[in-house]
Length: 93
Image 1 (cartoon, rainbow, N blue to C red):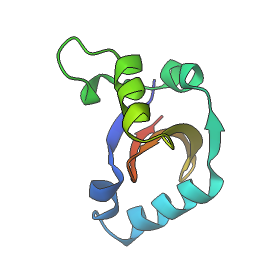
Image 2: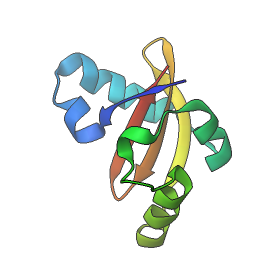
Image 3: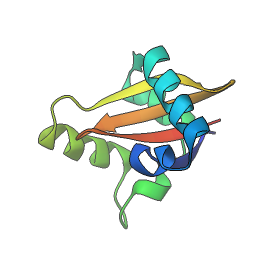
Image 4: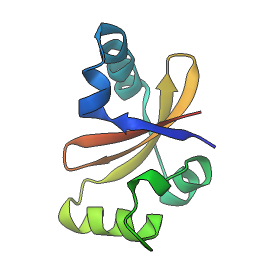
């Protein structure tokens, strides 16, 4: 199960190495279904009380139709991210 490492804005501020990993992740990304994404990530750090991952993603899609779920690489590890409202929420194996 992949763990949440942070939102792109905080991850990228960690330094040049993480900035480079972020750009490589974006370049290597491929879209995946919400179901596939949720099979691989622990989404609980992003949820409000009693909110489900699907409710969170549905709400994001209502406010940003370009919301999407992706698989990629974070260095040599597989990662997954949710893109919405100009931000990526990143999960790494």
